[in-house]
Length: 109
Image (cartoon, rainbow, N blue to C red; front, side, top):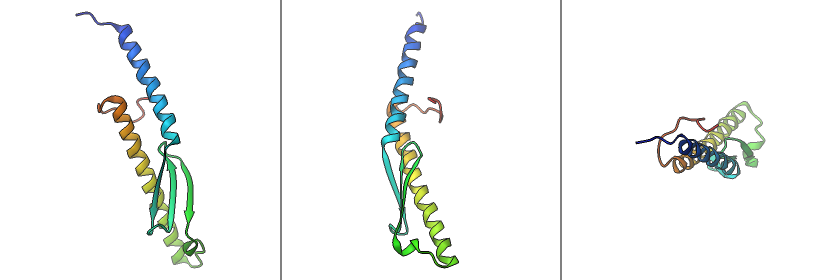
């Protein structure tokens, strides 16, 4: 059995190009997270960038320390939900690219 390094190299180049296209696609895919029953909403892309943060008017005017602390906790919660959803979407897309074979994070740039 002979091993064709050219074929292996071409397959690796194709996988790298596919991974680049996938990263570009993930940057366009928007996921959302909310907390406090929708009082705070966060939109992010599946590349991990926060795109927007929306505060309900009932919490936006935090006029006390307790309300500010609640608002801060709600913001963190909404952002974390959005980022988790983006990571999960990215994991699913990478799994499609690799045929389910586990690949370490960052293996494709």
